[in-house]
Length: 352
Image (cartoon, rainbow, N blue to C red; front, side):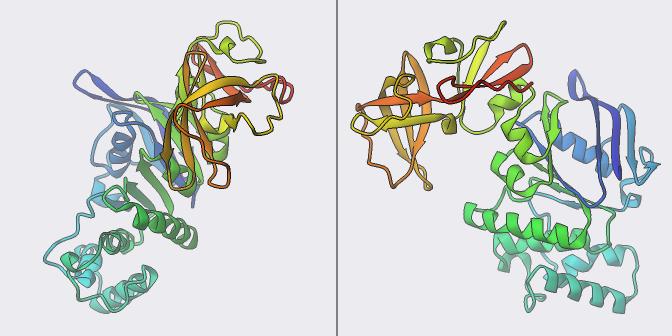
């Protein structure tokens, strides 16, 4: 492993920000640190950068323990969510800043900055100041500034948080392509699930200072190993008694059920219902336009479920009675998550 954290603990007073955190990252990978506010992900990033010191445990980069190495000597690039560009420096000077600190020759600085300006697609804007750039352009400059000294590791703290939705989507693709092209090992912190799934090679899910799960985005999303991870993604409906829904196997010690919108099929009364025997009647309580489709809130047997329909399907109205088929469900017992499939859909599959 190129980057390793071994049994890292960090307290801020009585608050435990990192609780025996251990993981490894292969060279050249783009890793997403994902979790809710207060889960400890930014603390981990800052300890790797040298901006915080662990109470105990080791941080290892390229086989060397760096706990006592000053931040300036770690060879790490850091991109902040607020850009942190120097307002009175041009694009050129912002990117060149780290190279000047290292006292690189002027011809080498000009060559490196020109290379990076081309890489981030801002040729011709070298003399502009940050106030003359869009949010997306400023973040690209911050990215180039972090890369200028050729860091061995790139850290990004919610790099798209201050950017509007459309530009954020564009920058996600751009960042993934740039990291792949440069081959620099990178870790980015985010609380945006879609962002982590789309950009990261692997995701590390954090909760209350601990790691709940590590894996490829699809694996973490589709086969959560803990109740927290199962309930973290998407817009889940959570309730206790899943026996209200037909044709699911009983799990000993079951505490709650988690149903994601994609697990629910809503059909109008005059539409064909393939699994009619297991479908149940529900009442639509809300209809919302979500850009990529229609989001429905449906009341079934006293439980509220969220479901989706496409624009191509006939419209559904608030107050309308519909058929609701729940074909998949997560059930949690203790800290374990089990995936069950409706018996009328196929034989149940359990993932622990």
